[in-house]
Image (tube, rainbow, N blue to C red):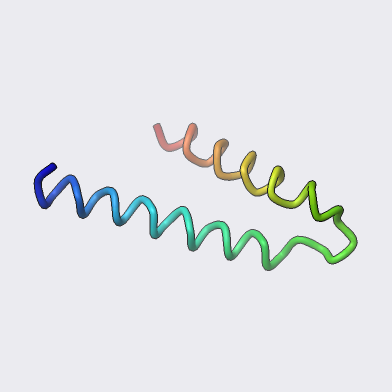
Length: 52
């Protein structure tokens, strides 16, 4: 892996993490704790598929 590939991987991880934090912050408190990660995962998957 060269420097460009490593930097792109780091950028992708950073964007995923920041999106996850932002999404978790707007989930209401009444949502089942087991449903919240699933909702975040689905939103991230849809976001990545729309970018590809």
